[in-house]
Amino acid sequence: MKKYVCVPCGYVYDPEKGDPDSGIEPGTPFESIPDDWVCPVCGVGKDQFEPMD
Image (cartoon, rainbow, N blue to C red; front, top):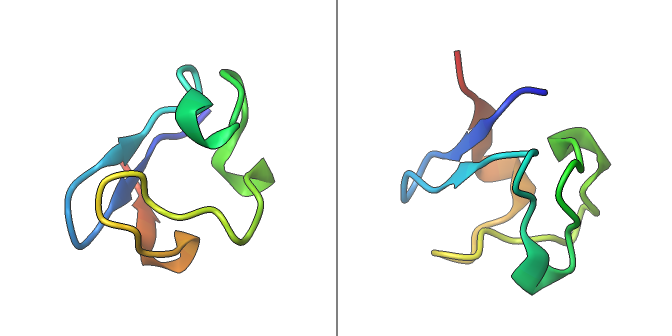
């Protein structure tokens, strides 16, 4: 599964870790995260994330 990086702050969403504090279970692909999820560091929306190479 691909990791995604928050362009404004550099936070990396790792699907293997998820975001348990926001209710996103480990193993959840970025595409499956609800559209209203926001970056846990800076609060921007999913549209501000880009896939990592």
